[in-house]
Length: 190
Image (tube, rainbow, N blue to C red):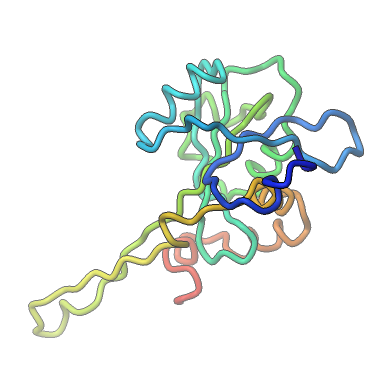
């Protein structure tokens, strides 16, 4: 709850569950976290099936936080949910992403509208830049770069702020500016 002192201050989360707003004109996106969120990313889809009742969990990658040069979040939604209320924040995320990100979903999930509870997870993109290996040199070096530190933690209010950014004019402008594969791979280095 926003009135909980830990909501704005305690930075101990890398994920947030967010629901559709309870009414039109209500700015606050209802959020909370799981105390038992899996540490192993390979267990996230089974967790979503078990805890949220997802039938067809899908992962949208390429989600960016404000000011990030590269994607640093992923979003989960249940592509089989056709009856829960539409999740406006999740729809804003999906609409902002470039077509090649949405195109990573299975064909039957690409046109689905996110509904009900969705999950935003911090997952900074890692890419490698190649140096050397040309003009007679035999060594090629790869320098991995990430969109942020692996162990970064957030307060629930910060994560809600990331969701609100997705719906803002600034968020849409940032996605438009980054809508090319070279920028997504190398961020501000190019």
